[in-house]
Figure 1 (tube, rainbow, N blue to C red):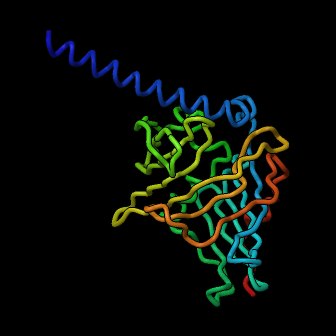
Figure 2 (figure 1 turned 135 degrees about the vertical axis):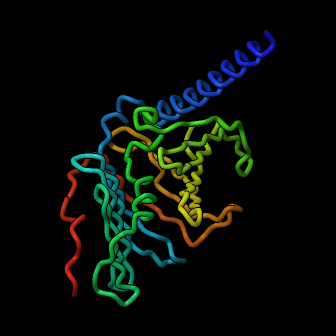
Figure 3 (figure 1 turned 90 degrees about the vertical axis):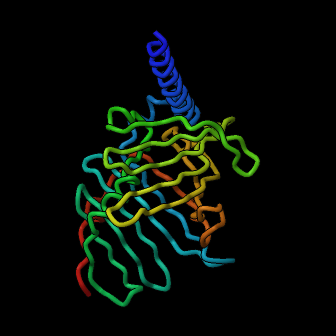
Length: 244
C-alpha cells in the first residue's frame, strides 16, 4: 500500500511540473503575440549590425526558415569582405574570406546539429511535443535582480536548451544551448533585450549578446534595425558562392 502511495505521489508531482512548464510556455507565447500568430510564422529575416566598438558597426543578416524548406542563413561583413554560413535541410556550407580562403567548406554533422537549434523561426518551445521534444520546469532563479522561470528543453538527439523566462513579462531573457557530441560538449550562452512588436504582430528581441558561463559579455552586441516576418525567402542565398 505504501509503495502505491509513493507511485501516485510521483505521478502527480510529474504531472504538476509538466503542467507548470506548459503554463509558463503558454504565457510566453501569449505575451509575445499569441499562439495563433506564431502558428503562422514560417520565416524571420533579421538585418542589423554587430557592434565591434564605438562607431564600429559590422552589418549582419540572419534568416530562419521553416517553409518551403528548413534552413538558416547568416552573413557578417567587415572591411569589404563578407563571411557567410548556410544550412538547408541536412547539409550546409561556410564561406570565410577572413581566413584567406576563397571557397566554401562543408558544415560538419556536428555543425548541422548545432545549426538546427536555430533553424525554427517559431522557437523550439512552440508545439514542442509535436516536434518530439521534452520540457522540464526547473524552478525559479535570479538573473541580475530579475526573477526568472527556468525551463530545460531536450531534443531527440539529447541536446539541451535552457530558457530563462522573465517571471513578469514572460519574455525569454537568456538561452543556454548544450550540444552533446561524442568527445565533447559545446555550450553557447546568449542574453536578449530590446523586445519590440513586429509589423506581423509577434514580439521579438531586437538585440542579443553572447556571454560566457559567468555572464560576462563576449564581444559586442548584435543590434537589429529591421526584423521581417514571413517575407519572401531568396532561395539563392543558400546556394554555395562560386570560388574566386
